[in-house]
Length: 286
Image (cartoon, rainbow, N blue to C red; front, top):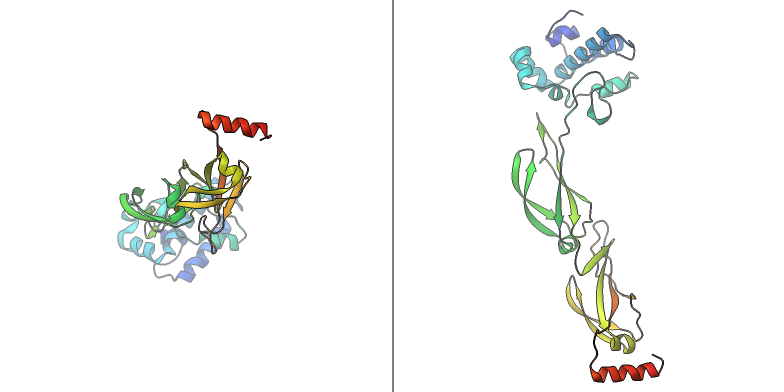
């Protein structure tokens, strides 16, 4: 094959060749020059790269139009190697012929090409437990494919720690293709509550008399303060379940539960009256 920068000459087709003719010609040449058919043959490998590049351009109407309009030199000023192979169906053709992909794992070209560019962007944000439970709208300054942008991000109720939110079209751009921006969600630790799946655990310290006799206790929850009935003889660490007052399920219907985890308040100092009563309780075996 003679040395030339003209993709038509490289493939050996006329400038008026149809897409079917271009594909048929590429298949024929790929079978002849594929490195798997020519192990250790550097010349065959170089030819295979050239015909693959030529096919990637001439099989794409937009790239073909630009090549016809500008010629090889100006075309390559506008299109990088990554651009040329972007969106090509070469891998499908090669697999049909029993060969491996032109591009292997990690987007790296198997036969000497540059790495294909990953158009997606990943960023991280930290939100409060309240925002994760209730949902929220956040105005954030984020690095996108178009630079730093101020974006409004909707946090759906029930989102989990480590989940990803996809902002379509906010990634990098290559020709007509745009990647996406993925926001990795992290939920900040809360001083009063913790989340276990779709359930919320709230700690409720009560005094000794309420633990012994039962009664009502005012408990802080994400929904606000609420009164909770305490059964007599409740034990430290025991949980009281309030059904359906946990986290809204992101997938499916309903919500998790709220669990009130009981703690016992033990005073460090006692008044004389309390000390006397404590001695009386001790005498009874309590």
